[in-house]
Amino acid sequence: MSDDTRSDDKVTQQVRNSSIAGDSDVSNSDLKQFMLDMRKEMREEMLDMKNDILSKLTENQQDIKQIKDDLTTVRSTLNDVEQATSSHAQRLDDIEQKKVPELKAEMDKKVQLLEEKLLLLEIHDRKRNLLVYGVEEEKNEDTKMVMLDVWHHNYSCSEEQLERGVVMTSCHRLPQSRHARCDSDGKLPPRPVIVRFGFDSDRAFFGNLNNMKRGCKLRVLDDLPPEMKRERGRLASIAYNIRKEQHQSTKIVVAGTKVSLQYKPRNRPDLDWKTYKDSN
Image (cartoon, rainbow, N blue to C red; front, top):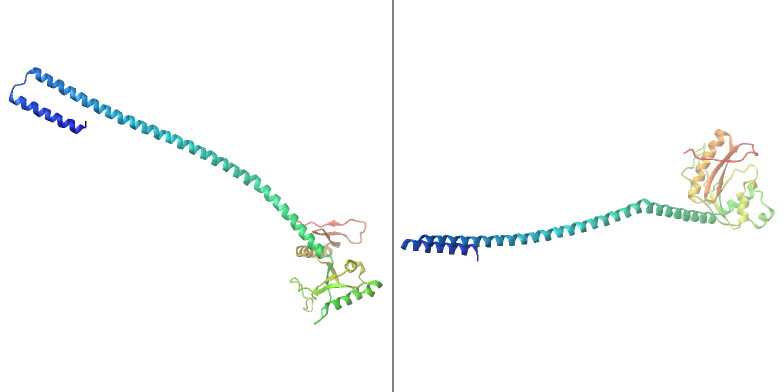
């Protein structure tokens, strides 16, 4: 029964009672009974209201408990996520701080070994080549014929070499170096010649400066890969200053993929060569 219905019934009852009171006198016992009935009815209504409130409170308490349980579950899930995230972050830190540097160092080492092997292969491929500086350049020249004449006039060739001739599989001029300097007459030096020999014996003979005739002004060098050639040029400039300022003997040595400069006092064959080291 709703509150509105109870109120209507109560009003109706009061009207009836008022009507009865208007028609005749009401005895004390009837009034007492009326009061008792009213109290009873009010108690019942209050009890119904109390039960209804308690029922709603119970439902609310259950809802609150469910919400609390859900919050507990959410907190537990968040803790698990935080722990997992922290674990992954720690692993990432370990990888970044330990594994990545180790892998990079290992890869750098492998790359360095591969580069060194490639450099050795290139050195081997250039083994039969010689670079010759100081050969006068002529217009419309036949470079092979020019070099044959250079070999015969500037080297003490053996009878066998003179008879069979010097076999050169290729021979041509190289572009002028950007570092080339003009002489006092404003003339650039002749472009260098690169020669590839057909026989190792010829390459070894003409590469040996001791086989040059006295007064020969040629400059003959091994053909090297570009980076080693640049290092040799840098060291040659340093060697020039050492000879000029310190009056030392110098020589540039190629061992494997390394180019080094050695020096010692002039006219001191009893002393060992020292290796030049950059100050930086």
